[in-house]
Image (cartoon, rainbow, N blue to C red; front, side):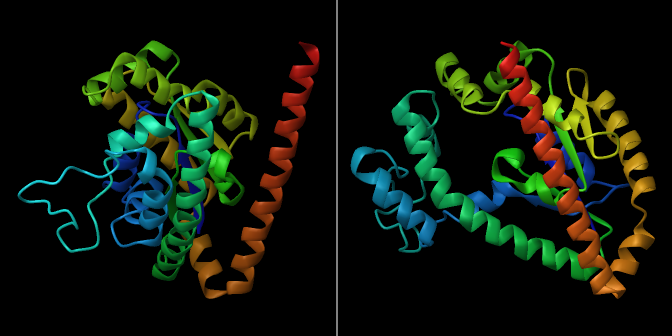
Length: 274
């Protein structure tokens, strides 16, 4: 089964691409890390309890307010849901304190999400899916690119386009809040360069500065090429012969380790020239 690692940055159109891939004629299963990240911090989960314990004492509005429909202990007695805008202000930004808080939050959420992703991969493998999309905002940072046969980065060439889309999507954000969210993630142009450095057939950059129709045309063409390089019959052979599937997965993993090694060497060479 081919793993298509899908990533980008905030407000670059990754969710739109994910929707296109999930819809006919592609109908690919999507493992959305953002959705899983919400599930693993729902009231009553260990992730929720850890967040409340760490951030609660210094973030009075960490939980949604008490209302007639939202009792103090939550609708099911497990606690009120997290107030995401309030939590976002604690972790988005470039100051030392924000970076530390973001690291703590990632340390709580990422392990739980990783376990959920592995379970979803296994389910789709047993269903015989020829490919599955790993929709992960921090694909490179969390190491999921090592499992991906193909990495797809959704990017925009102009930073102002990214800011404009973010503020249109989330009008409650101030310009400063929007800028902090953008700066808290790796520059999407850098992600695009890293994707291209993977080589032909292993990394594709989807430039999304145009219309949704143009984006769909681009995705359709890319999927046709990807499917040609990894046909469904190959997945069935791997499914019927598990040792072959394991060997194929190990080969992809080994290739990606070497790809990442070359990327780090490229980064070091560029820094040495400065």
